[in-house]
Image (cartoon, rainbow, N blue to C red; front, side, top):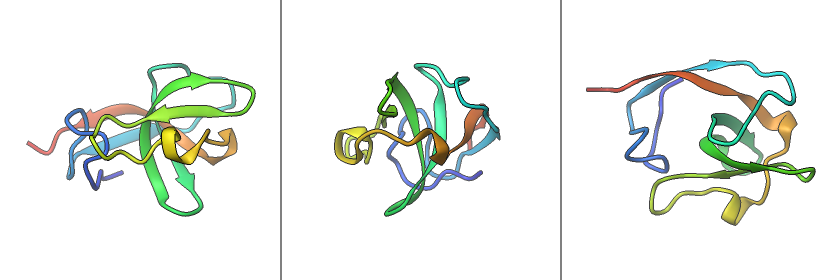
Length: 90
């Protein structure tokens, strides 16, 4: 998957590539970087902040990141996978 945007900058930058591992429920933990689908915004990549019965709370590292502070928790069924490898564009 190719990263677009800067919501995870400086860790993940526009043009970087990531490889994902498909997940089975319960294998996500705090600190993982996940890719998920949001009905309004499409495919997003964020770091897991906490996991509760309500869902997965995620945060971006960019100043204007669209994350759980605005979107609320992520439904586990929306998770496409977690990042297992990151290739920097430079």
